[in-house]
Amino acid sequence: MLCCGQEAPNMTEICGCSKINPCCYYCPPLLLSSRSPGSVEMDEIMAAMVLTSMSCSPVVQSSPQSLNDPVPDMECGGGELSDSGSSGYWSWDHDNVSPALSLSVIEMDSSPDDGLHTELEQGVELNVAKRSKSSFRGAYRCLWPSCGKVLTSSVRMKRHVRVLHLGSGSEQSHREEDFYYTKFSCKAPPGLVPALSSHVPWASCGSPPRPGPGSCLQIPSSTSSSPSGSGSSRCLVCCCLPVFQACTPLQVTVSCHNPAPCCWTPPPLTVSNQSVSIGEQWLQQNSATNRLTTTRAASPSRSHCSFRKGRGEAKKCRKVYGVERKEQWCTACRWKKACQRFPD
DNA sequence: GATGCCGGGCA
DNA sequence: TGCCCGGCATC
Image 1 (spheres, rainbow, N blue to C red):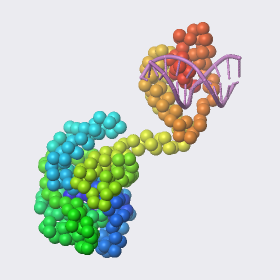
Image 2 (tube, chains in turn brown, cyan, orange; image 1 turned 60 degrees about the horizontal axis):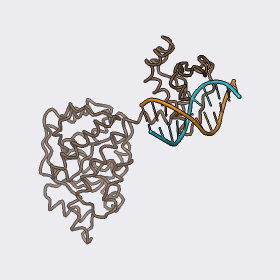
Image 3 (cartoon, rainbow, N blue to C red; image 1 turned 180 degrees about the horizontal axis):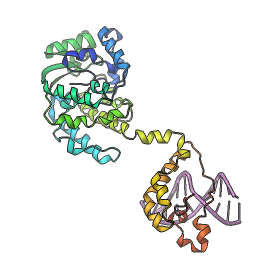
Image 4 (cartoon, rainbow, N blue to C red; image 1 turned 135 degrees about the horizontal axis):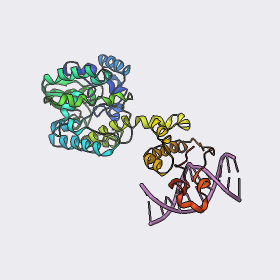
């Protein structure tokens, strides 16, 4: 059970990163904004401050409801995996992840504690291995942002939520406290830990999960003061996928925003192949590379970089073959595109 | 005006 | 994705 917190003993102290970065289901911005400042305990504030100074790694979120109900649990997790594998932007090694992946286990490995050690995969593995040995069951964790209090009794938890967060006099307090805590029992099956630890590269992207399209900002509960259980299960999907997508395409994004693209040079592979031959053979060999080059060179122009390459000195198909032999032009020249046969 | 090619439309 | 072309920049 690791959303923003850690294992049970320190959970109430560590959970609280949501106050700054609502990176997970347990810390939806809606709930964050609705919390009264006075209810924050000092130790939690301290924990939040500590976590603020550290980058929050992308984490795999899970819904609290899924913990109680294994059916949506499997549905969400499996769908996420399959979708990720077919997206093409980022790949998920299906071989390393059991189809019966339990989200409760994911929570075990996706804590901010792991995120705090993103640069130390070995440390993560150690922590994960350590956690996998400890079985944690029959506890109730408060899902209120920056709280994460763990109690062993549902009655106590309800009272905790009602008194501390919802307010004892609130009309909705008697209906909502069920939502703000979750029962969890974590037990990591053997062999899953290495598979999950191999996904640490998410964290290597360096940027914390930002609320983007499909992120927690789109939690259906945002339109209702009383979030429903169905919404929480959906949140799992909409939370997890953007986290991964935000990581892998990051390099692409960087290259697009980089002012350098105007000066982008083809990769060495292209240069070396250019020296081999000129003509259709070269074109065939470099068709893929040239397409990539064209694409990457064209992308800056779409991003307010009105770069237009000056006329090169190399003779193009038009000059070489002439208009009367247009059929001998390269495809790009025939299409009035940048010449591929005689690039500058 | 010729040339190169970006951007966009169409099937 | 392939194909085509308008339109613009450059020579």
